Image (cartoon, rainbow, N blue to C red; front, top):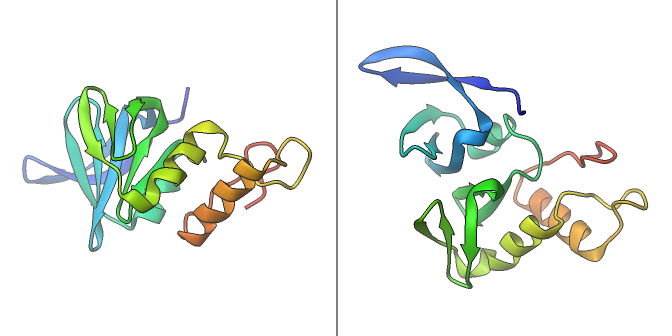
Length: 145
């Protein structure tokens, strides 16, 4: 089980710290200085933070980037085509330039290549692409950034 975390949210015009279960988050999207946490039950919360900072609350490899300002949880993806993916019965568009990152991310894109377990071209490709996009996951086998 993943550890829950808290976000500052406004509920019924009152600011509260809302507990979030990482497995309940289907996707994150960002506009300007705000990131929206989209939950699988259809609810959402906007938080004043960057996408990169929001992703620090989740384990590496849990999300894949589908366009410049949106990531989706690999746990909630049902099907993927070249243009879109199906998550919990809803269609989400994938930017054409991000399709290969989505495929790399759901296959084996969690390792950095620093040791034998990590060394595959697909894994290293995804890890360095994520660095290029300013998302710095830790490798689960060796904790390398």
